[in-house]
Image 1 (tube, rainbow, N blue to C red):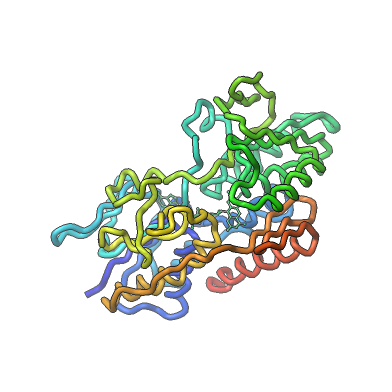
Image 2: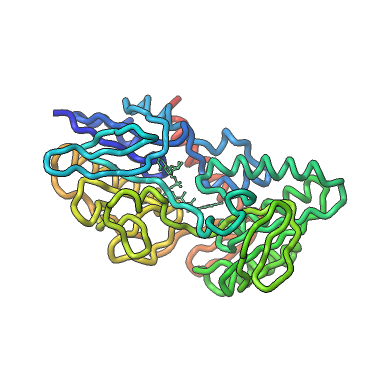
Length: 380
Ligand SMILES: Cc1cc2nc3c(=O)[nH]c(=O)nc-3n(C[C@H](O)[C@H](O)[C@H](O)COP(=O)(O)OP(=O)(O)OC[C@H]3O[C@@H](n4cnc5c(N)ncnc54)[C@H](O)[C@@H]3O)c2cc1C
């Protein structure tokens, strides 16, 4: 009997699943990948793309090519609901009104930006979740730069001062300056400090980099709405801006609440240490969209999705072969963090080591390019 395995979303962990199948095909399985587009974009290189350092093809994974190499079916569309199998009836994934049946499913659909329901955000702000939207952000930036004379001020709001907001503020600053306009970047954060989750040492270094580059940090500042040419802040006058980048943290993707799968209190898919839905349904998950049992504070970063990939692949293969429970995933305590600061350097945090230097960016660039090459070679 052939087992139908449906992979929902072409995120980092599912790249690993496809890679495992390409390298050593799994017998007795028919794999389908559902994704809104034929490309997945690598977030690690998105800030460099906004800066103008990378071209768009350099940061995309060819999902259709990977499916072809893995002998998998590619379905273009956005999954709206996942219904697990029940009493002999196959599970289904609803995709734009069409039902895709499955025996086993896995979700790697990433996350949604926080607070997009504020007035004007959807209409006027630019998000990068999913990463493919970074293309719209860069096109809008370039278009708007073209409307401001050389030498004039170009104010930008970047909302959310986590690692992504920090990188995007600095790489946009670099692009505006390179275009001969005067960057006025405002990094707006609802919480009390930039880079929450990082140490005080990293924060001090980050603040000095931001100050040197003329980025204004506005902490403890609530955004109330976004307009086409301004951002409105609680208790303050609206701030005129040419562009607003929405870099708030990770919220659960709408697909989860619509699916009736077990969710953790934070609204993400509740999975056990084997990355399987905690109710024992034949549904697995990885990456930003999960909440791992026993690790409620696990950061939502690509490095975790990447590390989960091989465990997920092994456990799915075992489930296809009905070969036992599978391996447990243990999240790493910490990870090497390399943030592009848009000046040819990166801010590195590795354990207690903090550095801001050109070699840090060269290391980041080498790691990122090597990661991309690995998947490119699988389809060539
Ligand atoms: C600017 C920026 C820079 C970052 N840099 C880093 C970094 O350097 N290092 C790091 O570790 N982390 C970084 N992150 C965080 C990182 O992007 C995420 O943690 C990571 O992408 C999560 O991977 P994932 O596989 O869960 O999902 P994603 O990479 O988000 O992939 C999910 C995929 O699922 C698809 N999808 C979504 N909804 C559906 C649906 N309903 N049906 C079908 N498909 C769907 C999406 O289109 C997407 O292709 C960065 C984030 C940002 C915003």
